[in-house]
Amino acid sequence: MFNLFSLSWRNIWRHRGRSLMTAGAVGLAVYFTLVYLSFLGAMENGIYNNLTASVGHLQVRVEGYREKREFRDLLIPNAAQVEARLATQTQASRVVALEIPALVAGETRSRGVLLIGDQRPSELRERFVKQSLVEGRLPETGDLESIALGVSLARALKVGLGDPVYVYAPGTEGRGAGAYRLVGLLRFPDPATEAQSAYLALAAAQELAAPGSATRIELHFPFTRYSQDNQLDTLQPQLAASLGPGLSLESWRQASPAIAQIFNLLTPLVLIFAAIFFGLAGLLVVNTIYLGLLERTRELGVIVALGAGPAQVTRMVVLESLLLCSSGTLVGGVLGLATIAALSGGFSLEALYGEVGGVFGLPEKVYLSLGAWDIPITLGFTLITGLLAAWWPARVAARLEPVEAMRFTA
Amino acid sequence: MNPVLQVKNLKKIYKVDTVETPALQGVSLEVHQGEFIALAGPSGSGKSTLLHLMGGLDKPTSGEVWLGGKRIDGLSRAQLSDLRLWNVGFVFQAYNLIPVLTALENAAFVLELRGEPREVRESKALGALETLGMKDFAHRRPNQLSGGQQQRVAVARALAARPKIILADEPTANLDSKTGLALIEHMRTLNREHGVTFVFSTHDPRLLERVDRIVRLEDGQIAA
Image (cartoon, rainbow over all chains, first blue to last red; front, side):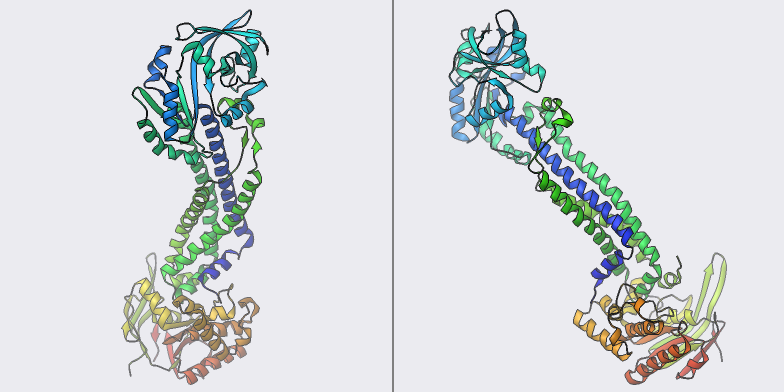
């Protein structure tokens, strides 16, 4: 026994080819939207993880550090104490770093660099080694005699592993100069960064330029997805309150406003594309539903004559549109989810963007995965498309005069 | 006894641009419970128009239509739909079954619009099909039925809803004479045994021999 639902379902399959094509268009829109949303999510997560791995989710800095020019004005005194206080407030991993403008020299050449002495927990150290170390090793914690350089910097200085490297940091508060042994070569996506990169252990950098001090303390939280980032909204003010005077706590968004802006643009951008996909599919749905109604004008006239009210006729047309869209959604959704599942193990985009990707912090591998809102957003688009596509044909059908409709000949 | 249906001085003028075509010119008629009435007359005499106005499918230019003691000519579109749904059964010349539904589902269509429970719909529709000798064809689609069988399903659709009155617009026009007569016999039996009130239009003289009353229309008026 039928009901209006099954009648609508049978009606949309009267013209199998036309309905299949329309449902296919909706399916494609659903497929592309799901894959696109998951791809966008994967890119967001990849960029987010790369960026926060290099700058931390939150950073302790000297207040107003951007305006300060003197090296000593940028120093966080008693960095170990500040770090220890933070350790009582949060489980986040901490990186203590001292950045020193310095002159680095080999036997025959010298270059100006931003020397970094840092101390990082083992998981972040391993990640840094995996991503950047191409030869040798990093200076160990507390190692006062080793240095690692960017590959292009080492080439410019004409030094190789095992060669001596001399560092001058005039105007600082430590020894101001030191001789080290080159133990590691580093590669960075940005050539400019690579040509200026020199790494010491934190202790060595403090001995050289600022005993006991640091220029930044990074906090790294165990977030793997960009969607977890909103937890910082609560954490940041809580942790900032525990800092002493003269120090500030800023988020990665505040530290890298340009990249934060890109993040803000990504979601609206994908929604615009989805709206275009569904808009085009919606036109096909309108066409199919309207043609179907036109061909069934006499039949609709009979239905109205038998007592179907405007609300029932509207419901029938809307149901047809929603069922057509749902059929496409089901197929497109299943194919989209299968594609996402197949690519969830990760695939490389290096061939697509080459080395440039690294400069912008793009991930080497993209792992497709769906965010909590991706499926509701896609279903929402389908529902809106189905309803909008039905609106006009339903209005026409609900206004049919039964006598005129029954006389209609297509 | 109050009539089931009553029309008073009914006029209908169709307007196309500035051209006016009178279809009915002051028709008055009463139909009582259990009557079996034929509207007779040549093409263009106003039979279909009168049936449409009596069933609330169209609105008169002037005059009154009363159904079950209620005046219906001024009702809104939604009110008229509701009135037709609960009070009037229609049988059309071209069967007008819904092709994607089976005979049983077509017979139950009005009951579905009324929102009656599935079991009730099925039972009433099957009963109506059985009355018309169509029970064995209940699960066939219209394209698997002959013209006469389709029209019997159309009558079953009207009958299953148990309306106050069934209006049939030339129900035998598309049928051969034997099938047409058989259909009229079915309708006549329903009228006699179940008290169903029928008003139908025809210009087939053989059918007119089987009715209680003939209302002859000529040029939109009841002929003397």
